[in-house]
Image 1 (tube, rainbow, N blue to C red):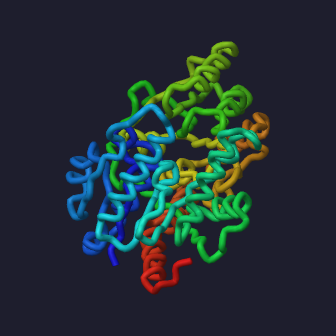
Image 2: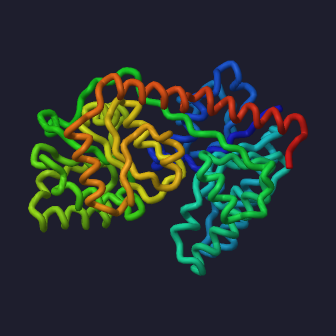
Image 3: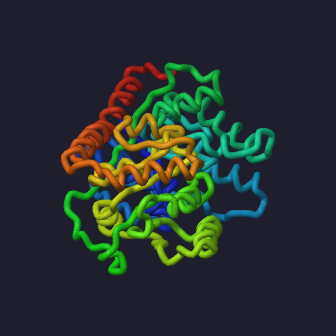
Amino acid sequence: MRVLIDTTYVMMHRLHKSLSIYIFRLLDAIPPSDRSNFKLLVLEETLEYFQAHYPEFELQSYHPYSRDVSNRLIKYVRRSLLYRRAVNASGCDILLVPNDLIMFTAVGTKLKKIQVIHDMKSISNQPKWSVARITSMLYYGLLIRGADRIVCISNYTKQDLKRYFPWTKAQKLEVVYNSVVIPSKLSGHIPPELEDKKYILFVNTLKPYKNAMTLIHAFPKVRGWQDYVMVFVGKDTDYWQSMKAYAEKHHFSDRLYRYGNLSDDALYSLYRRAALFVTTSLKEGFGYTPIEAAMSHCPVVSTTCEALSDTTQGLLNYYEPPTDENALATAISKVLCHPPTKEELAEIAAQLQSSYAPSHQVSGFSRLIGKMDNNSAY
């Protein structure tokens, strides 16, 4: 039984997006000896990239964005038909769709379908009767009804899906946690301006639902805060500008550093050199960054929002409620004044590395494919 893995989400300007990284980590984890059982559906613009990075996989390219028109309905129908034609012509038996953001991939095909659901934030972030929320409800309803199996990336995502779509058959739902991989060898090089500084690190999208403003508010309340700077990794946004404006108003903007896209080497070197990693997130379907930081032997202060209490396994330092700057300042002060030992950090890292080993993720999908091979799809 051959499996077609849909990589439609991956575009050249999205190579560093978290969903692209999820797809790449899944592909990397498939043993080379098994890759002949899989075929990758790729966009024409990424064909050379996949040929260079995944030569063991058979590739099928297509271009759903050709001949686009301004009418959104016609555009959607045309893309859906191109997608269906490509999938049906693949010669595969099962379609694995690891993204839940490309709307035309919800169209039905001849193949059995495994659909990965990452989170419900496109629903939960919107006002109850807004057009955006209703559209997302209809879209995710189509995804769920059209799939033979739904893979949720955490127990939280599974429960959230059941909350919004209680009619979903329990037999359809499987939890397969993400894999989390950190490089074994690093240069250790970080931006030169940070070399002689102790810093608190934040790595995430700089948007309101990641709640980094609470960290800005908390920083001057941290005991001994003058000994530290704050480092943010994320693209410049309006939210970042408001964070910076607050720091300027309160005379500590010189203690803020922001970096956009960094190489893996630079990012993981930052993790390993940080005095503390902080995540203030309000919305997480999984939560890569605090796990990556902990696996890099960095102390972590985290919220318990959504999936984080599940995926971080109670191993980190927590504060709540997530928007309480005083609670956050207290948690940060406690860790900085009484940091965990190297042995304690190593034990946490080892437990998370074991839980999120790529082999576990691949085994989860392999079991699911095996069930569908036995004609037990719902």
